[in-house]
Length: 197
Length: 197
Image 1 (cartoon, each protein chain N blue to C red):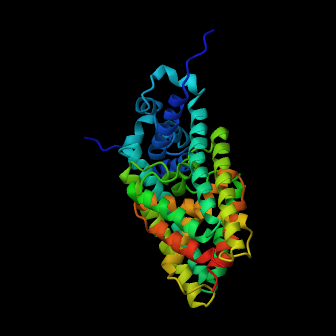
Image 2 (image 1 turned 60 degrees about the vertical axis):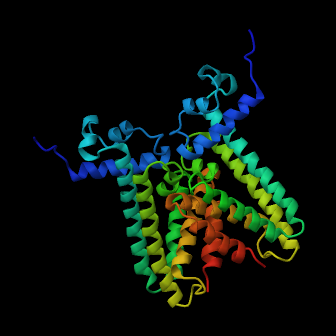
Image 3 (image 1 turned 90 degrees about the vertical axis):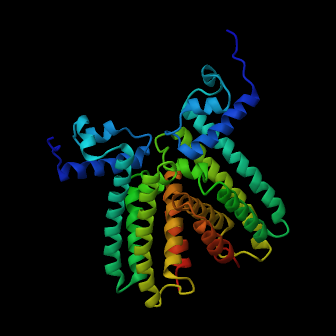
């Protein structure tokens, strides 16, 4: 049997467009046809790349997670000198991007976590994504603790986990209210208050 | 023209089953047929009650919101004596219900807020739901501030808004991890730390 022709560039385009479409329309609300059309991939080729919409969803989550892994790694590099400042910059940049997008979209993992309860494949991908982010945030927090800028009465892991969960909640509220008040409040309460030494 | 026969009991059954089905399967993932079958309502009758799935979704959100409005009002009554204790009881009860449900389900509004960006009708219903809850939590917080138990450097409204948003985030994490650690962490960090005087 001839192996189907697959290109890495096409696969990547599908993942990028998938992330964008799922972000806005949800997983079940989004049609694969729209993803394929945006990625300029013929209908029949989808299954050369992914065995199912569910498997595609899990891959989209992993792809999206890796993008923020890289951003957090860049923040961690900046955090060597000033972890509190690096965190503030990371979250302010994110808040600005959300504002530029009209407060829609939000976080793909936050959005999908409310609607993919029945897919163990996607749930595991989301849990892994959040764990990966939390670990990276914890590394920055630990630097800030060593620098004397951040509270030490809680472990860096606990601080990071609470930061991540509460941020995801604020992002959802931003979407529903179409307002950046929830994110501004989060930055004020968490970054300028709760995490400080 | 004969008016369609409508019963309040049937309408209520549709709303209750709708809440349950949307909670587990999401809005787009859920079929009206399942809701109708669970509510023992013939297919053709749905549109006697609701003009569209979207309008139904908004009503389901309002119905769900009212249930928690009532629970928060009951907490507010208990809060006259001990607001911090009433808050702790409210959230511990919720956490227990989630645990009993296997950490699935979660909060309908939190779940749907990630997937109904395109429906202004549902988005408005969700924003109203969250505003109603936040106002009720703020009333309890204000009592706790007057009792000297809760912090006064932030307004009761700001404290309540942060509590609500961060709780919703913790509930999503609970769903994804299938674990009550996020809720236990939230109770420890927020109720036993951050909100205290």
